[in-house]
Amino acid sequence: MSFSNSIAMPANSIDTLLLQLAVDLSAQLPQGEHYQRLLDSLNQVLPSDASALFILDAHKSLVPVAISGLSPAILGRRFEPTAHPRLAAILASRAPVRFEADSPLPDPFDGLVEGMPDGELDVHDCLGCSLYVEDELVGAITLDAMEVGAFSQVSEVTISTIAALAAANVRNVTLIEALRSSNRHQHSINQLLIEQARAQQGELVGNSPQMQQLQRSIATVAPSDFAVLISGETGTGKELVAHLLHAQSNRSDKPMIQVNCAALPASLAESELFGHVKGAFTGATSHRPGKFELADEGTLFLDEIGELPLLLQAKLLRVLQQGEVQRVGADKLKHVNVRIIAATNRDLQHEVEQGRFRADLYHRLHVFPIQLPPLRERDGDTPLLAGHLLDKVRTQFHAPQLHIQPRCLTLLEQQGWPGNVRELEHCLMRAALSAIQQGEQVITQRHLGLQQVNPSLSASIASVPEQGFRRAIEDYQKRLIEQALAQHDGVWAQAARSLQMDRGNLYRLGKKLGVV
Image (tube, rainbow, N blue to C red):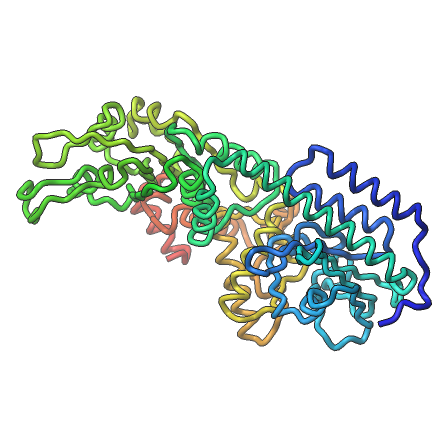
């Protein structure tokens, strides 16, 4: 490409940009805000209608950290250059790369431009710059303009200067955030363990105030030995938070043992937790350590602690108070040093009031409570989660060009998501499979199978006469049952308890309404 006839940007524009970058870099801003300020500053001096700033991660993937004029779902994704020829071309060049309006290379942002029908931008000018600090590639910038030839008005020297300023700023922000991170974590091994936890369990995705507060809570309590009680609805990520707490703790190099209290058979629960000796009961053919012993010096994660029987709650309390376990059938006590993390989707305070959970055990566990917000209360996080979850689908089904219509993101945000992130993930997976099976690369409302939520109560009432009063009541009952089942992973007993109904009656009603 040639910029020989292009116009240089006035020096005062560069000076203004440089000053703004310096001011923003020195400002105390939330994590990630520096990147958005950087991109906003670039957009003030370049004729861009849609832009994105990427950093290059350790796996050589491009991670979007700031966007303008594009769908927020992009922030939840990672872009593999091998799957996106334009991004690969940008990274392969030290000079700015311009793509003509009729370029045969697919645009990585097709269908993801805000304010356009279905997010499409068929005729436009596209420019990309790789970001280098000395000889190290640190990221990239992409710029799109609706006007063909818009970037020909800017000289190559100007664009290269801006790219150099942006690269230096990215490097400085990265170093600052790394220093802040090292102050929060005592051991370098923790970072590896956190990445392992994310790889195995997923990662906390979201920029909402609720998620920022959650991140602060985890960073605050993780280095201590305090017991942590994680509460939240089904699908909010309680297990992930438990793994991150352990990964960021001083016990991170010791084992984390997980126990699903809801799955413990009543007859074997004590043996599972505290172990047994040979001959303690029929079938005990050898000595066996319990979960507490296995977690010695590490962390014991008691998932669904609210399901633990009262008798076992008393024995658990004794261990927590005295730090000693006694195997079933043994006379000797064994001292253990275990950090307890518990999780529940029940209101344990209410369970205490109802006599179903011991008050003394509740207060022993409730040293540092963490309440996970439901997805419907996480402002603006649904599009980010959608982008992140679809990234996994693209990898799993080898569909790198698969994306979702921007208008569908609004639809997703309107849903109640009783099953939270897990329900959202299943919904997107079904939609993606439906689109792939039909040979399509764009997920639409038809694939999602979701209806537009009507916030007007009067509109809901107005629909009743058309279907009849009894049918409206039955539809409402069916939705309530389906929502309760989704919240409790399809367990009828738990769904009945949450609806304050007898399990048998609820099952019969569900069968009548076609839920079963």
